Length: 253
Ligand SMILES: NC(=O)c1ccc[n+]([C@@H]2O[C@H](COP(=O)([O-])OP(=O)(O)OC[C@H]3O[C@@H](n4cnc5c(N)ncnc54)[C@H](O)[C@@H]3O)[C@@H](O)[C@H]2O)c1
Image (cartoon, rainbow, N blue to C red; front, side):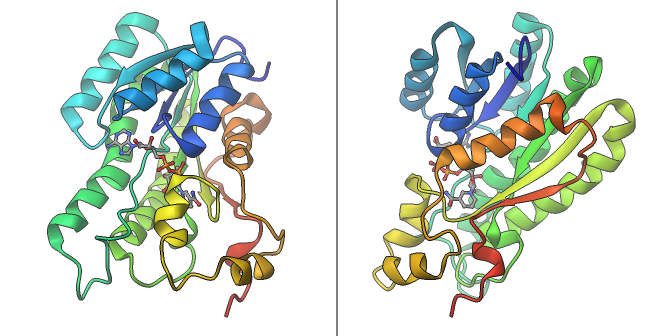
């Protein structure tokens, strides 16, 4: 029970990695707050977990909604021990290189992926500082290597990674650790959008060059977030943990 009696909020917990983390955190003793924009998904995950979860419908790209959610957390739970900023969109059909990028699309992606991290941290920090807490942010291989054609997503993930470091320096002395997980090639609905739906993507060739020779599982990333949220990582602050089976350090082509 590595998160016994802790209250942890996970954004985008209705699917993929967030769902795996919600189940894993609850199994380790946490009460999990499922912050999800899609009510059907959020309710499904919360009900599957049972008493150890509460679904709080939240659009993390909307600062007023985020303020309301953390106000509710304070009123109903009076504490917050972990914040896992996991929600994002990829929008593979709409994102593009900066030369072609529709600026409305750019703003939508950056609002959901990057501004949301600022909003959630801002409203969670007063609660997290009360007893000492943790923030886990989510970057991507796109923050580490050059991947053309999705520049809004890339910019949002690079900013999230950089923000993690400044959070770690600023709030470490106040008892809050901030770390970042950088996944790639994890088998979730998002990987369909980012790779598998692309007719030019050769899955067999990709897996043949991936050092561990398989797609990652949502649980592979959830376990990293669990470690970074638990007291086992009490001296880990400002770290970027890459969870990608070695994809980003391999010359692919
Ligand atoms: N799957 C991968 O290979 C991969 C690679 C790199 C990074 N990531 C990152 O990991 C995280 C999880 O990705 P995933 O693959 O599980 O994605 P996913 O699409 O399966 O799940 C994302 C969840 O976030 C929710 N969401 C979207 N916008 C929201 C909003 N405004 N407010 C609240 N919830 C919102 C969605 O409804 C969905 O349930 C994301 O930050 C993603 O960028 C994933």
